[in-house]
Length: 324
View (tube, rainbow, N blue to C red):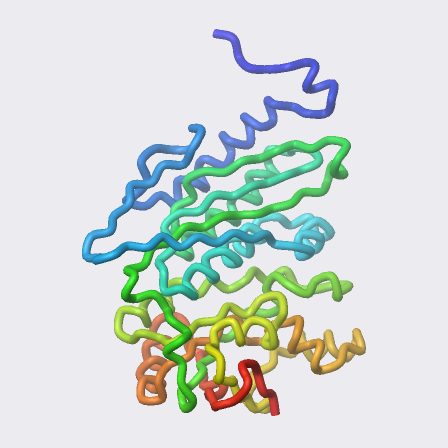
């Protein structure tokens, strides 16, 4: 039986046999993510997933796609590639959960200057870990070798997530009213944005909030959820607000992580720019009715978010964020 190989491709800088080796090495990591909906294993042309919409009146699919961005450079500098995949998954599933949807499956895409099977498998190991944390199946992906377009040691990583939610349970920001309470889910650090402003940073992976938020959704219907990524407070929080509502947040109530004080001081970055770039220690905000706030915090505390706290309140005013 003849195996696929190409001397011409190899002369051009692409080793297709390295691609096959990568697939073999990553299979054990992908296997960790398999859920009940998976139809067949890795290696086909498309990822198959059997949708289970039992109990839903009007199932709606929710999708999200994103990359890791300049944090990849930190992984390359440290030659540590086994956690960056968690960030890729987090950027997608944390967006999907903002709609109230449960992430079902994930696909990744890796473009590299040179395919080193062990390195690619390490990246996918991180993606698989992120999928396990999100209880989402890794049902497919693609690795593309781009000699001449990228330096041999460079790579880029992006992903795509699909989730499901019953239409009546979709998070609707139009229900937000003055007097509602905004809760904060703490971040693990810089997460996956703002790295172009840093010389050095910890490679701590982005926190995945899927499990605690799904636990909350079983008992309470939040009015809005916002994933705090690039653009910080000023860009992301208003996305979860209707016209006529403003998020009023006392600066002293924000539990700012020390890393952000260091960044501001060493980089001489103005406070406004810090809150407009970084998460400042808040990875996600959840807006609930005031009468639900105590119960919501209790649920979050019991489901992996012991540091969740009241961040601010919703007041009448121009749509946006008021930090005072």
